[in-house]
Length: 230
Image (cartoon, rainbow, N blue to C red; front, top):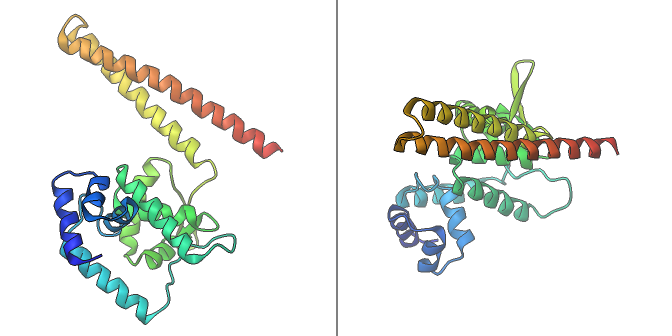
């Protein structure tokens, strides 16, 4: 990708164009544009000059030494294919709202063979400081997507097999809080007022959503339990 391509990508992001539209204007595939943005700051941090500099730096680094940060796979899958999937996975998470470094940390963990890495291993693999890893992990821990455990003097982060159940359950609890708060507001303003009616409708929506999410989480828990018993 040329410096001119990167300039046009930055302009497209500033104009709130979709990735698909930016790709069409460049004559590139959407996946290429998505990966370019994901590896260079994400949609809110992308800069043409910085992306060009970072790409040159990565190219020099590859010439000096072999890649040490390739994902560990459990089969004989081509390393390049694994790397391409990791970039695609990261780009998907960034496009759906996750911060770039947080997305990279989660991708590294979930793709690793054991589903866990130490803070030092993550820092080395992603070429960032341990403090950066710690900040990225906070968001994931709040949503129950990642847990941590102490190993002597080091910290290990891991993705539990029940990660999506815990994440979904945490989201369901947040939805219940939304419903309760909106209902309380409707009582204060009165449902016969525009504000109260709006809050009442909001509470009804989140109550319905919360019930559906709770039922889905319970069905998944039961299915996972049956799988383990086989």
